[in-house]
Length: 108
Image (tube, rainbow, N blue to C red; front, side):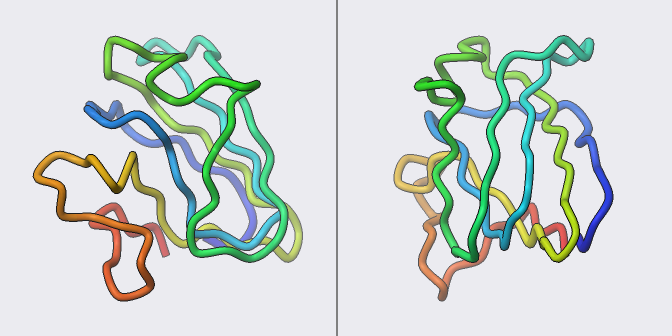
């Protein structure tokens, strides 16, 4: 995604942390399924695996029930390529932030 904003459909997850493959500026907001804000973070720089810190809390800390929507806003010159949730312990343990293994939730 190059510029603009996007809100995902409701996602069910079992991991702990949210990671982005992006080149900032990118803002990511974690929402309840009904749209209530749970946490927000900003990412700058170009990195395959930005670990998202939501005010000192992880994704599972702000959403222990395991259901969220993600709202992302990509600023001028920024890009959001993909995201993953806790690649070291993802369901099935098959995803990682390695440049050789890509997230199935590819956005662009």
